[in-house]
Image (cartoon, rainbow, N blue to C red; front, side):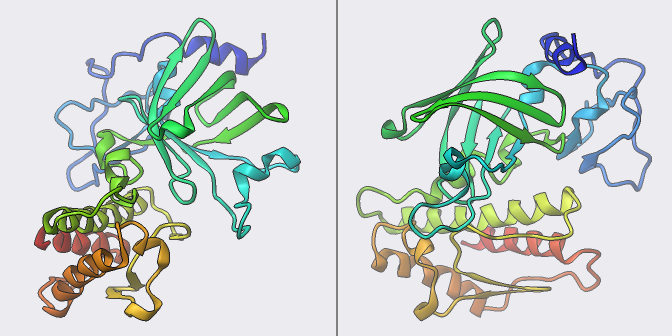
Amino acid sequence: MNKMLFFSLFCFWTLAACRGGNSRHRNKGQDTSMITLKDVSAQADLTGVDTALFSLKTFKSVALTDVLSQVWKFEENDKLEWNELFRDSVSDPQQYPQLVLFSDHYATLNPRRGLQMGQWQLNKDTRELTIQWNRPAAGQTKYTIREIALKQLELGWSNAEGPVVIKLSAGTIVHRRPPEDPFYPANNQWRIKPSKPETAEQIRMRVKNCVHFYALFYQDNHQREETQISFSGFPTCFIWYNGGIGIEPRATLDKSWIDCFYSYEQAMQGYKLIEAELEKHALKWPEHPTSWVKQTGEVLEQLAGKL
């Protein structure tokens, strides 16, 4: 029995107690928004600690469902049948495919391009991972878990051209509270085009949720200590500066952002809400920021609160 198979079987057992006496706390003054311990034999006591992110490597043993509940990045290979995962058949941009599974069984596929959201369930006996998508036309997708470890996942999948083996990788860092992840389905509903005209209040909430998404996205990148931030594939009306936020001129506004609204006219209503707040120059920027990524997330949350 190889190590990978052993681990996949081992993960079926429940998460080791993380609230016992053998716990390690961060010292005062340390950032508790993320818990990352290099010593995998250590355990963290998460009770009473306001941790936005924590590392699965913290625990001695992890349940299979907890290992699955991560941001998984598809690893590209040379097989032609993978074009539908990695390339848009119309304009041929790179898709940056990801599968994000949450501990409360919500799921998001391809949050950058080809966004789909749904719910997942696992049959531990057959190792079958089933995702039921919200869009009726999308139906459901079934994978077979071939191998799994904290950072690697290998899935079996059958498409129109036959069986495919999909390899994915993860960073083991997850949000303690799933709704604080920018890719959580509830944080992306603003991107779904409504089927009928919306009221002024509904437009305001759509814009507010858009700004909240970007606040979470910046905060998530800061907490993960990302050095490069990519906005590829996200619909936006913003211009991002190092220590500043602007709004695109209407003439060059991203069409994908306009398409988040019922019509161009309703998109302009939403645009004016953001434009009016930015023109007030009432947002407070930290005088001595330690991170422009962190401060931008905080300022965006201010903006969301004003909408």
